[in-house]
Image (cartoon, rainbow, N blue to C red; front, side, top):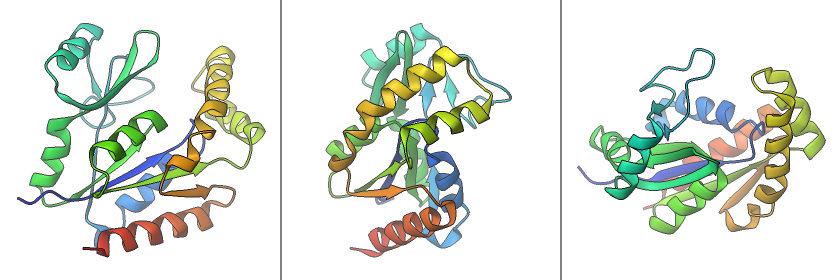
Length: 191
């Protein structure tokens, strides 16, 4: 099996990247397979191991880091690790598909560094920090402290946007969907 391409969508929490990834996954002509990330946290509200994340204990996660089993990984918050297992990318390529990632900005840039020619890295930008905070509150999945941590982190993440291949501002979901679709379709059609 020849290795496929990699489509990275990165953004601060609440920017809409998950919605955009799901939209692209439904476009069969793109032939995309979703890369399930590993996480060292407990599942939240109905999340399923092997579908939403590979939930690992902190010990398991650190053992996999030592064994060089990750394409990329990061300690996002203290003792809260996320990463992409190499075997996960291979699984998707073995199925004859291109890989799509819903991933934080550090992980997205790490993948781009590892596979510079085969990766399209798209930064999904929220209309504003205020709008981001509103979206995070509407989710009703996290405490005010967690939301404030995510908003503070978003400012740092926004500064990385110029390092991506493209920036899509998600101020209108339908327009953002069309923009990421065109970027992805064009990239995948290039030899």
